Length: 143
Image 1 (cartoon, rainbow, N blue to C red):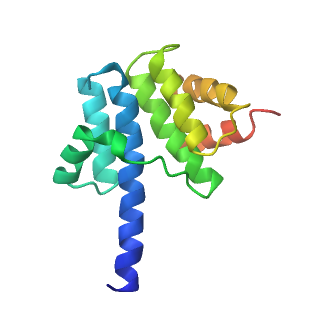
Image 2: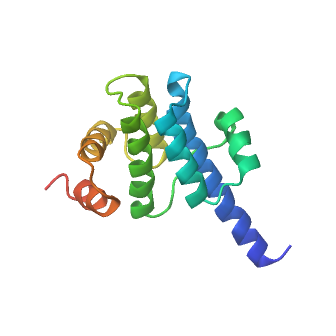
């Protein structure tokens, strides 16, 4: 196996784990709506998730760990994706938000601040902000 194969394998696995975390949020209510499905389809394409892997993750999404990204910007990007999934479901204050908070802790956000970060994230997403605005607002939310 070449060095490039190792890098590609690790990158691909992180994308699959990230995708599985988003599927976990989508499946928390037991169904995937048409809006969620469309979002998952787009995200799978962007993360280069093949059709067979996509089906496998849908069937066994809990077997994938939540791998926190090293960079803060990557963590914010994942939080943005996950927050969009919860927002698409039009659910606030129930188990999906609780799952989002757990995943946010798994992504490396501190348990003491996760409620505030997730609340801000969901507010920003409901206001339709893009990733750049989301990142800037979360980074500066305590100012």
